[in-house]
Image 1 (cartoon, rainbow, N blue to C red):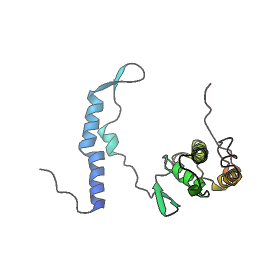
Image 2 (tube, helix red, strand yellow; image 1 turned 45 degrees about the vertical axis):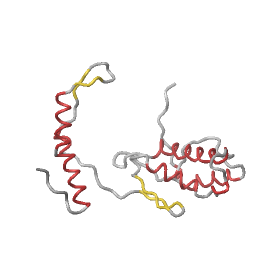
Image 3 (cartoon, one colour; image 1 turned 120 degrees about the vertical axis):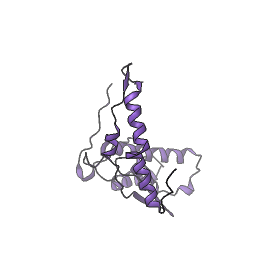
Image 4 (tube, helix red, strand yellow; image 1 turned 180 degrees about the vertical axis):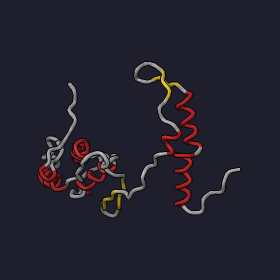
Length: 179
């Protein structure tokens, strides 16, 4: 017979985490990885490497979300180990523009949004990562605001190249692409 649901939201979350890391989910993962062989990129079938004990010995941390206030909304996303800050950085870029003056289906609006995305993703490539393993920098709105001001005259005119910024003069580190 199943146990009754936990009384509070926090207890329900902890119950779900316990099931995942030490309960029926961990048991199913362990069983699958031990007994099933799956075709991988080598072209051969291999069993998995993850065990139930691996799951029981590790738990994802609970952390406060990153937030950004955009007009009447507070947007919350995961930390720099995730893709979350990219959206927040895009909103920071767009906040200085009067989007109400642009046709949401028009070329100027689309161009502006895409260029803001390109800048945020360029910064992500250079500066975002798991803070337990890499040095990171917060989004640097000063550089982005400057480019945004330059672009105001021609909506996007100042966005020729979407390269990552250099907060505090530090050089961005971006993996080189192979030809």
